[in-house]
Length: 475
Ligand code: SAM
Ligand code: SF4
Image 1 (spheres, helix red, strand yellow):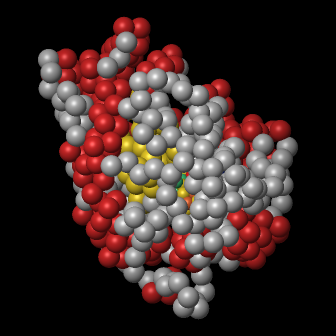
Image 2 (cartoon, rainbow, N blue to C red; image 1 turned 120 degrees about the vertical axis):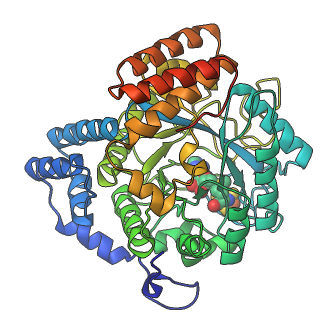
Image 3 (tube, rainbow, N blue to C red; image 1 turned 45 degrees about the horizontal axis):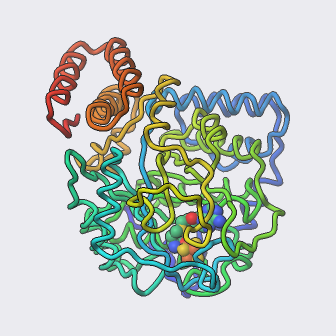
């Protein structure tokens, strides 16, 4: 790991931070965009090269229809080249909503007296995991408020519970976390518990805007949050996810800042973020955010496509905050992971009754309430392979090492066969009859199209072994 102390900033020690708002605005303002320039940049991206900040600025400044169409088409082509037709599925699991911060966009904020506070006890966590496994989930992101109760040791404890629960043929094979920043020792503790990705969203990369929304608690410290991933890297945690809460500040600035953060991580540690998330503000109990920077569907679609072009090899996550129709549309412009069957009220997976959402029990409103089976069924209609693959992380293909593998050929060799095997498991263990028929048809088609005869033979053999009851056969 290449560590560059120049780029590492411990909170409260003055040093040049890697996000400089005026630099980012200069880049945006000095750039003008023409359809010709946009087209050249898309060609560069299609040759799978990362884009520079200046090039991304040209894309964010494009407003003519020809350029916007070209950006979307380019992102679609690139996505198919890099990720094939598979889409990775996961579910969020909220462990506790106690919080000592006062973020004006969040239903969990400390000042929200209407919030119904709850932390799952161990037995309740087990029940939630069992319910998730009964639906066929294999990958989770555990989510926590920021509270003294949710120490790194506590988080590690909950992660270990998640891995230990095995209901029938079910098991959770990858546990990511979305939790408050930690110190280096804390990151070591959660790493040792075996977490996959550590996700943390900067919310807004604009320091002044940040102050307006973060009104109290530890999260009010912009730098502490911004440097958290440097501390994670120091602790040896190299699988990290970044994000912006779109709607807090100008989306064009935030897109460039995400690229700047990616560049920083790559320059210092030789490994960029594994994923980028782009939540948009949704309704929440006690929400108090003006609408000045809210992002329209059209701009949101465009920004997802731009991110895809800017960082061809970074995973991109689109959550159930967005409505089904928009998710279906946007997936094609570069998304690699979505959640399915999502419930965000604490303890709601184990409930048998499907109650209407209650904003006082959740962090915000979700707008895609489709079950996992419905989502899988609809993905299959579009010839997309739903994947629960966790092979890379479990076989050590992460971080710097993973980047070496992210070259052409990787998808054919690993991702498509692994997606096929995890889909075969889902179809055997959990799918309804209609989904199963569609799924086996797509598996046959996928195998039929493989050009490596040895791999094809081996995959046919493994699919048969899955049908016969073997599980977790990875490449
Ligand atoms: N408490 C931890 C923290 O703040 O880092 C965990 C994160 S929170 C449970 C997950 C993310 O949800 C936040 O980082 C934020 O981006 C997003 N979020 C918060 N309020 C939201 C809202 N009203 N609509 C959409 N997303 C929201
Ligand atoms: Fe707490 Fe996170 Fe919500 Fe802020 S976003 S109030 S830190 S749960």
